[in-house]
Amino acid sequence: MPPKFDRKLNQHGVKGAYYGGEWVDLEDCAGTFQPDSSKCSGCPTRATCPRSQSRNAASTTNKDTVYDVVIIGAGCIGTSIARELSRYSLKTLLVESADDVSQGATKGNSGIVHAGYDDKPGSVRAKFCWPGNQMFPQLDRELRFGYQKNGSLVVATSTKELEVLEELMERGNINGVKNLRIIQKEELFQMEPALNPDCIAALYAPDAGNVIPYEFAIALAENAVDNGVELRIRREVTAIAKKEDGCFEVDLRHWEPQDYVDVRKKMGKSIDGTESKEISLLSLVMRLCVSFPASIVVMEGLVRFGLLEPSSKDDTKMVMTIVAFISTALVLFLPGGGKRRRGTSVLKDIVAKCPPPVGSGDDGKVTLKDMFQGGSGSKTVQHGA
Image (cartoon, helix red, strand yellow):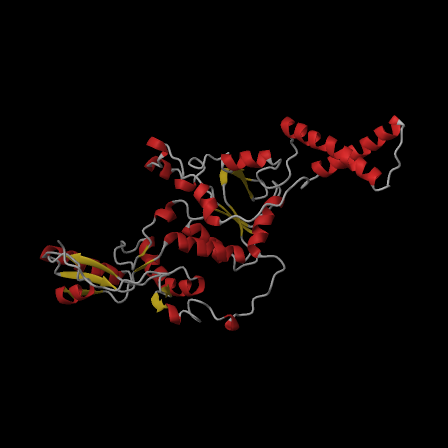
């Protein structure tokens, strides 16, 4: 049985948080991880919440809408681009085929922020890895996604493996990686006492770290939207064509979960939230059944309160019945007519009623094949329509 080691391992969000790569205890979070509002830069206020603006813009977008930039894919790369472009006066659109950001490769990423010692010298990765690594502390101070600069170790258990450490050290130096060093057994086990006892040395990169990949992508997307980028989820790109004027035409297919579509149809609404022009025969019959007796009640009420004199003439009653019938029908048929306000619902009760994602495996389990199609948030798994 392996020995037990009593070490304090901090967890982001539990009794504190990682901020700019370093751990901050809960009592010290005020003014650091939790910003001091009195030191705000004085951003201009807006009449409408930026995120509401992005959502509301979806209902007005049509085939003739023109954007300066369209970013396809809302993973860590797409959201990073969107966030950077939000600094400029551009009309930018970020589209994602799944039902939320970070639902592709990002959500399954290990989250390691590499130092850059392993990349082939002269490659694009070698050129950008170390500079990118050094950007993360400040990026986390701005967006607070919990970047943890905990360092990395490449361990050796034999003299032959020590040669590999020397090669990685040299490669890192060529790539411009700073602070690399090879540590010996005593120092190594002070850092990581639970390592295999056969370990004799390690290459230590103190600037390596890790992030929660979906928290990272979400933070980038939220900041981009706050600064004017429009986000559309459940939008599949079906075609891209270059026009004669040099612009590109991008065709999107909007999908929603089938259950959601069915509910919207029963409510007489389309999937984008607008009033549907189509009314089912059953809905029409039900509305008429409600309208007719309601019209009689309206007419009797007018007579009771003296607003209408009782008459023995059938034609007068008939006219008033028709008027009341039409008036009641208009109320029920107009957008929003006949709605009832529902009480509040407890979120956990709503979540408990939600079925788990259904995949193509036995008993509806999500399989590896499903994951290649976008994971639990993909159109396939969500039975999109």
